[in-house]
Each structure stands twice: as structure tokens, then as C-alpha cells.
Length: 128
Image: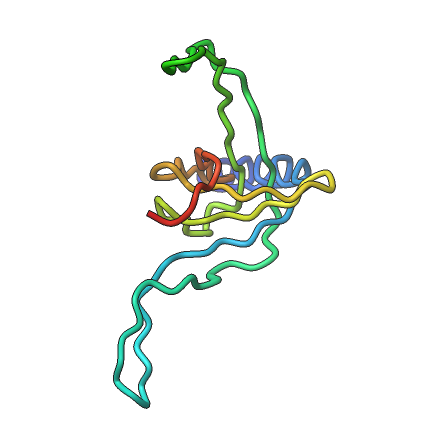
């Protein structure tokens, strides 16, 4: 039974990864300490994952975003990526897919499955 489940999970992962048409770089902000000077720099952007295969998925959400001047329909953006890749909330994710490069921010804790991880994204507006 365990071998059947493992084989099914591997097949599911292979099928999902065959749809990956993008590549991403993932950045985190970290305090960096210079060991020579013993000075800690505040919040430097650090590349933690480079050129990782991935896929963006888009969906229109039925909710309307109301502002003082207008209402607009919102779009959900989700990143599919290998389950062993750690994507921390607030990370900056630069995705190139279909010849377009866009910067996003991970908006929450990823949903991790045996075959893949799903990360909800929003447009990157700068580090908080």
C-alpha cells in the first residue's frame, strides 16, 4: 500500500512539474553581520533560491475592491513550485514566465503537498 501511494505521489509530482513554464528567484530580507567589522547591516536583500522551475496560475476573484474613486475586480495569483522549496511569507519572488518578468511578494504561508507547494502572491510594492 505504501509503495502504491508513493508511486502515485511521484506520478502526480511529475505531471504537475511538466506544466512548469516559468523560472523564479526568491529573495528574503535579512540582517547581515560583517564578520570583519562586527557591524550588522539592516535588512539586506538576499537571494535564497535561484532559477527554480515554477508556474504562475491566475484566477479572477468575484470580490470587488472598492476604493474612494472606483471599484475594480481583483485577481488571484498563485505560484506552483517544488514542495521542498521554502518560501517565507513576505519573500520577494521574481518570476519569468512567457517572456514576462514580474515581481511578487508571498502573501502568506504556502500550502505544501507531496507533489507541489502553492504560494499565494500579490504584486511586490517594496519591502515593508
